[in-house]
Length: 208
Image 1 (tube, rainbow, N blue to C red):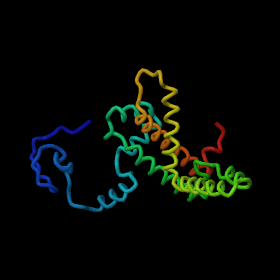
Image 2: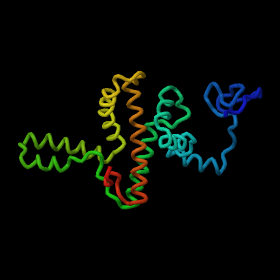
Image 3: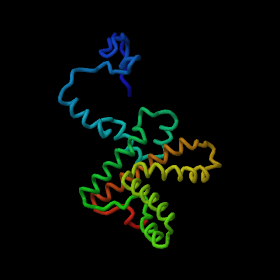
Image 4: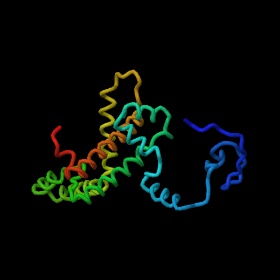
């Protein structure tokens, strides 16, 4: 439920625009802005991680209670109600890495082909060694930046999803499917973080 708009006239403290309503139509500043206090300090600290916004908690809740409805609502134009998918994924990944570090659980990363590369290096030529070294550096970078690795992985899975639902009545574009997959990745890493936090084990160690 949204509060009823009043006829009270406001003057924006940022751009001096006179207006009626809850936000300045020129710059978007809230009409209820006040002097900075201790709660503003705490709010700004939470905003660094995206935790100071109500949509963050609402998005997480609906990802587990009605994920299909939530994603469809976001893609249909109700973006202000939910936390942005890319920002949410980065925040969740930071939390995931912090929990793994605190619980002393090694993270193998999303790309586990280092052993394959080590085997190929034994029989590779000089040019092959150069190519494998480049591939190894790319894989190492992705393992150190899991959020970006997940995004790249989702790009591939989006094509598979589009193929699987090619006969659906309401077809989503590739971009819309990509956003949906980012939300699902955030959901996975929330569960993985909880597994590490409470059971000190990665999610992949449990049987399906």
